[in-house]
Image (cartoon, rainbow, N blue to C red):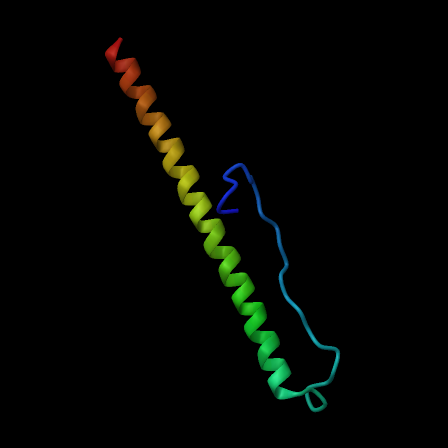
Length: 73
C-alpha cells in the first residue's frame, strides 16, 4: 500500500486461529496467535492511514492549485 497510492480500498480480515478448546490449547501458541492477529491489523491500519493522509494532502494541494489558477485569470 505504501508504494502504490492507486490502491483505492483495502478490505482485509487478517488473522489466524486455533480449533483447540481453551483447556487443550497451548497457552504460548495462543499468545503467539493473538500477537500475530493484533500486529497484522495494526500494521495494515497504519499503512491505510498513511495512504489516506497522502491522498487527502494531494487532493487538497490540487484544490488549492486550482483556486490560485482561477484567481490569477
